[in-house]
Length: 328
Ligand code: UT7
Figure (cartoon, rainbow, N blue to C red):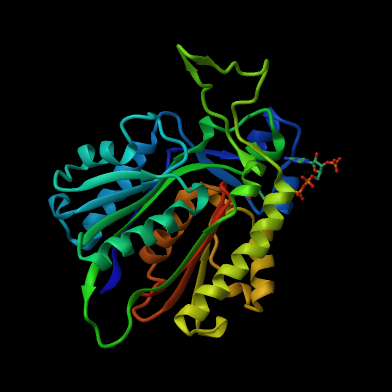
């Protein structure tokens, strides 16, 4: 059973924050941020939520695919910044868009979440259990970021991207998702973390250490090292699975974390940078939403053509990583 993307959509908060504004809050500069990350500005929520952004992105994807919300069987929403622990964001999106027939749940695989969502959708499609699935990445990371920590607050932005995936039936040529690889390295997980509430029940009380940091904390260099090696390796593995080579690929749509990481991956793969589209200059790192937001941008600009071979690949907290190969 083939799985195709039949519609994409995205939504970003209204408010843009550029590097100069951040330089008013912490000791940094536009020059430093651009040189070390490639980021120029990002969208920051002034009220938009993971759910409201995701619902908008889903509605656009459905509209593009010409599908009614009632035709959706499943909503998989990747996020690491939900507004509520209960109910999950996916169920709230189900209600907002009126997808009454869909089963819905969240996936937390941080920046690799959208890829894990695509692979999960693929597995469900293979069993024949569901045929029409919305896969969404949505984040409001600005509430998890320590706006006094210049090494991390410069990186992240808010937004959502969605893809409607559908069973394509038997086709003469391979199409849709043709190979997927995903993995985790939990041992190194604490290099990128954000603490939640302490365990407090009548039997046990875990007190937070005085002044314990409840915001995103990151060993940037360690994440950088992991990303450059792991992303290139898992793309190679996915290519081998698909019996393709780097040369066969039209576009590499990578997690938009840092332009230097993308350049390092391109170098490791011996691929030219022209095939690595980027939007991080405008929107920064939106974790699980970066890949679907960029994919939607490319799709709406008419840059994805039937038959194009596209690699999607990302990495994130967990540590998680993954790659998928699509024939568009
Ligand atoms: O989705 C995954 C999310 N995580 C990532 O993508 C993180 C991957 N890592 C990175 O992107 C990079 O490691 C960073 C952009 C976070 C940092 O760049 P770097 O080249 O690794 O810098 P560094 O941490 O080695 O710091 C170099 C210097 C330090 O000063 P000293 O100790 O050399 O005096 C930092 O204090 O740069 C300083 N620094 C800054 N200076 C100005 C750190 N952040 C800033 C800043 N502005 N915003």
